[in-house]
Image: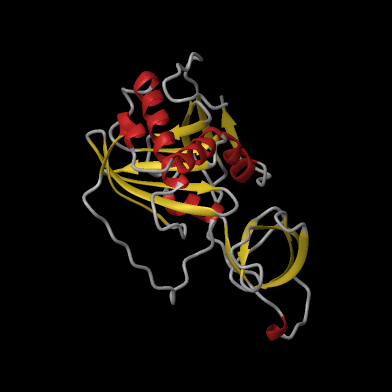
Length: 267
């Protein structure tokens, strides 16, 4: 449930404790796997030689469906193939979550940096960065006051689309640690938003999408940041020390609970 900025959250604060079984070091097991891609309603076969895959794992592959998240449907460990005939699984989502989470509107929030670390959650939504890819970033002296988001220099169309993204929980994940914030905003594709945050002000706001201007993903991320901090201030001020991470409730269950046969959580 989404609460528009400025509206009160009336439910009592609650927390969730997640405790998966202790995992042993994972040894890669070669396999042929059937991967289903919901976005394309398509199932294809891939070779795996990097992971010990099981049914229900979320993966990314190379080839024509590179960058599209798939789900393992079948695993075959008895095979003989010509490797050059197959594309490969290149990453698997790390969905092992352990620790205390608190309810905060549409998201769960943690104040322990080890519970929902960005590097782990990123594997749920995005493929690994290629070593050969080259990136450049640029910043100016623009300052955005979090309590005055309406003053952002964006068109009305971008503002409205960003607000729709915020209201529809497209900001799947957001975190702030040591003054640096990151968010994953997922629409047709998932994009990464980054910013610096201190004393209620946003600086160095950037997004990985191809837009050449302040975009809807950035607007949505800052709206979510404002809501989450308001809920933290109201319900968890004694726990907040400048570090938090928040994940959409449904995604926590989809990635970290539904795909696991073992583990426990306590309400």
